[in-house]
Length: 101
Image 1 (cartoon, helix red, strand yellow):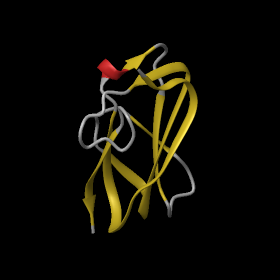
Image 2: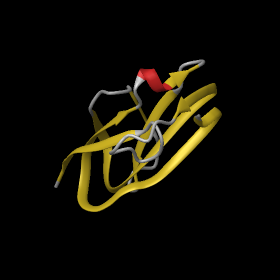
Image 3: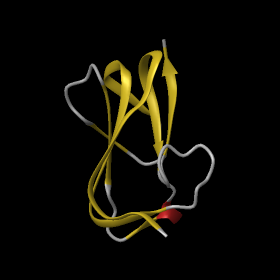
Image 4: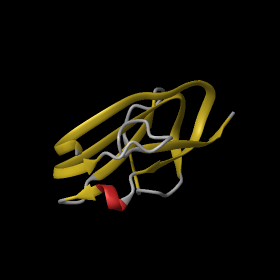
């Protein structure tokens, strides 16, 4: 079952808010869930004006920290498959805030 077939732009958020000022986060989309052309991944905080490109599975330190976290995945025909694992924000997508104050 495809959760997001043939996505071009998928934006989710806020996926975290009310925990403090978010300074670091990690976006995880397991490679086993991706098919087709590789997408680009972006995160931003509500206080940031621009999306910051991130690497899948790598902790990211924000240029502009903020109190809400948003996710954007940009692809051209990639698909993220669903398996309903625990901890997913949406099928196949996991995001962890790794530092906040």
